[in-house]
Structure formats: structure tokens, C-alpha cells
Image 1 (cartoon, rainbow, N blue to C red):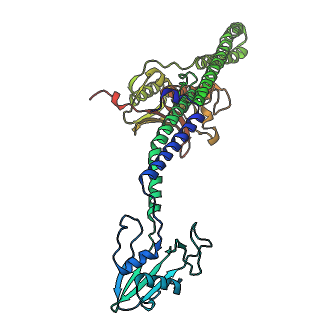
Image 2 (cartoon, rainbow, N blue to C red; image 1 turned 180 degrees about the vertical axis):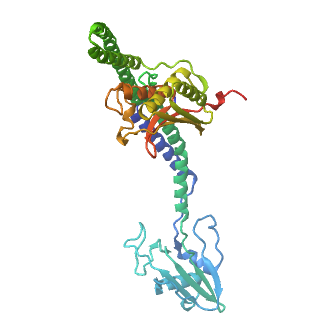
Image 3 (cartoon, rainbow, N blue to C red; image 1 turned 180 degrees about the horizontal axis):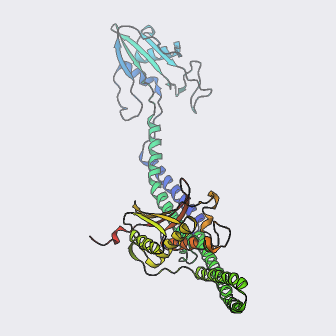
Amino acid sequence: MMSGWLRRLPIFWQTLLLVLACLLVAQAMSIAMFVSVRPPRPQVYPMGDIAEALGAPRHGRDDDDTPRLATQLTRSAPTADTEGMVTDSSMVSRLAERLGVPVSCVRLFYEADQSATYPFRFKKVDSGVPIRHGEPMFFNTVLAGVQKDGVWRVVRTPDKPWISPWQQRTVLWFVLSALMVLPLAFLFARQLASPIRRFAAAADRVGHDPRAPAVPVGGPAEVRLAAQALTAMQLRLSETLAERTAMIAAIAHDLRTPLARIAFRIETAPDALRKPVQSDVEQMRAMIAATIGFVRGVHVGEKKGLDLLALVQRIASHCHEMGSKVSVAGSPAWVEGDSVALERLFQNIIDNALAYAGSAEITVIADEGRACVKVADRGPGLPEPMLDDAFRPFNRGDPSRSRQTGGIGLGLAIARSIAAEHGGTVTAANRDGGGLVVTTEFPAAPHLAPAS
């Protein structure tokens, strides 16, 4: 784990330190490999090695990494069977002299070195074989043979492996360096991502509820600055909302006095004028009461385990007593919540269905950790672009403010606010065959159900 001071460093310095640490680890691995592993010997075959392989077993060089020459005995003289192999009389004479046999008893074929210039300290000759300190050096395929007692002893350089030893060591070096650096990169990524995830979760909570707890200040300097800025913005939003809420509540409250005077003065007016004005006054009073209730916020009391099926059945029974058509089906679904607030939530949704369709069909479902309540009706429904707007304050499907078709457009907005306070969601969708389905989902709490 990173120490406290390191976690508080800016992301720039944390990244720079990680790069430097990885570089140091990689260099340490390189030095360790350089010291502990012997460097690969070039795959070069001096003529002396070839002569030893033809004349006697190799000796004195068992510790080198050069592949051994393949040896075989045959009755026939070797011939060049690889395209590009050549022979040179001077090289054959040198080999025969080394073996102490006539030139006619020696065969030597090789692939001439194609380099434009030979390595340092190597002399270029017409035979195409570099010579160092008078010793011909063969870097490519060699095929040689000597005849003794009627039998040809033939040697050939082995085929080059797909991955040579020095390449294997290089790959091992890279793998070990990556394995050494990986834990550092993992710790860095985890320590850097953790405060960012916490910041994102806190910012999401603030986006849903300005009264949510402030964003925790921690992690790199950039994240701390962002958290402080978001906390300041949250305070400003809360103050602005509080001021506007207080202003709207004050205006709505002050309107009650002139409405009371209007209602008092209209009492002596003729019936033809008094009754319509009284109806308007009552409607304005209802609108003012609803507005005051909304701007004061949704109060959620103590939460405890409750069954949504039993809750909506109780609401449905009240609706039946008022002559409304409400049906309930489904299975028990336990959640943790305030029964008064949730009853208000579902009452608003059911009232909305009754206002526009005259009936409501309720289904309660508990599945996969979610408790779901669907309230469906056979009303006119809503155009698709307006489905989410239905939950905005003072927005109604019916643009009028007629009391015969509902209130002032706060019922669904209040329902969504109560659902958010319980960690749930409220959505609307058009129903197949006409009508609307309002779906409310909460985190299920089956562990709160009483033992049977």
C-alpha cells in the first residue's frame, strides 16, 4: 500500500515516480542478467573445429554454447546438397593440410559470407570466408568430409534453431522485468482509481440529492481539488434551492390572505357569479396547498421492513370504499422504508391512473434482489417524448388545470422524490393496447420478512 504522503501527491508526480521506479527495476534486472548470465558465443565455426571433428573427438571446449557438428560415416564422398554452397581450392588445401591427408581425400562446401564488410579484425578474402589471425571463420552452413581407409567421415553444421540461445535469454529478460514491474503498476493503478471511484460515487449521490453527504476529500491533489470544488458547488446549490423554496413557499402562503378576502366578499354576490368564483377560489387553495407541500420537501420518517403487497392492498381497499376500480395481484415483496411516505407514493400513482383512466391494475413482483410495483391503466397514455416529463413538477398530460382531470402536476414528481429517498426509481411506459404503466422499483429486503 502507498504511504499517506505518496497518495496525496498530484497524479503527475505519482505517474513520474512510477515510471522512474519501473525504470530502476528494469535496469536492475538488466544488470543482474548481465552479471549472472554468460554472454552467448557467436555461432562461428573455425576451421580448427572442423578439422578436429573430422580427425578426432572434440576436446577442451565442452563449456561453449556453439552447437556441436553433426558427424556421420559413409562410403560415398559428400556433395553440396544445399543451394548456394560453394567450394574453394585454397580452403580445401588448408583443411587437407590440417588433417595431414591429400587434397583429393578432402571435400569442403560452405555458404560464403555475404557481408559487404567483415567484422572488426577480420580480413576479407576472395574465398568469401573471413579470416582472423590466420584462421578461417565459417558463419554459415558448412559441409566437410575426409576419406580414410575407404570410408568418408562427414561433418555438417547443425541447422540454426528458430530461437537462438541469446534470443531466449533476451525474452527471459523481458518477461522477468515485466513481472517485477507488474506489482508496482498494479498498486499504482489501484491507489489511483480508488479515490476517483469514491469521488464519482459521491458526485452521483449529490446529483440525485443536493442534501447528500459532502464528497470525501482524499487521494491525489487533483481529486482533492475536484472534491473541494464539488462540495462548494453543492453548498451553493443547496443555498440557492433553499432560498427559492422559501420564496415560493412564502408567496404561496401570502396568497391565502387575498383569497380569503375574495371568498368573504363574494358571499353577497348573486349565485350566478358567486358559485364560479368560489370554485376558482377552492381550486387556487388546493393548488397553493399542493405547492407548499411540494416545496417543503418530502419527509421520510423511520424506515422498517414492510410488505409492498400488503401496502398496496390497503390502498386498494380504501379506493374500493370510494367506489374506484383498483385490482391487486402478485406476491409479497419486502423492502425497508417508511410506510407513510410509501403509501403517499403509491396513492399518487394510483390517483393519477384513476384520474385519466377510471381504473388501475396493480402487480407486485419480487425478483433478483428487486421489489417491483407496476400500476397499469387503460387511459390515453402519453407520447414517447413526454414519458419522462410526466415526473417533472407542474407538468401534466392534460395541459389544462381542470380539477375534473387531476391536480396541478405534482403527484408523480412527489412519487419520484419519495422513491429516490428509498433508493428506488419510478419510470413510465406506454402499455400495449393503450394505456400507461408506471413501474416503481426498490432494493428488496427479504431478510426483514417475519419468520413464518
